[in-house]
Length: 189
Image 1 (cartoon, rainbow, N blue to C red):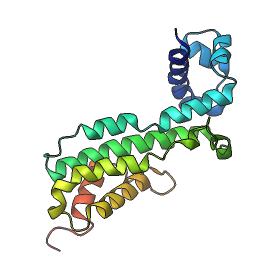
Image 2: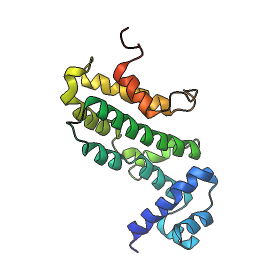
Image 3: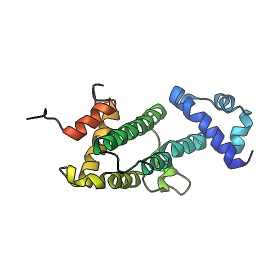
């Protein structure tokens, strides 16, 4: 197996283990989950921290969500697009939050160099741009500029994925999409 493929295989195996056990996961457990010898982990990564760093990069990579959103039909109804966008973003952000919570506090300065994940442009702008393009055909139905609507949408989605910000009642993506579409007032008010 080529080195990059082996590294990707090990990273894919470690992500669910981190979600389950956090940084307490052992290299033996990682090797077992990947179906490889423990020494192979260290031939692919300098140490466990380097493997965790690679897992962070993978979890934070926006490629899949960008590809999904770019394939959404822009002629769908505004309601259908909002529900789809909210559902996808909610799932994505929830997954990232769960993963980062499982890791616990990290030394973010470690990732600022060219080898860390800090060198990559934050995905927020890319995702925002795709969502704005999806909503642009409906700009006449949106009360605020599309960019502002996307900011509100993103803030609400992000906020509902933070366990310390909610009581759990605001976590249903369908309900959130409806709230974004119709606001806080009842119809007729």
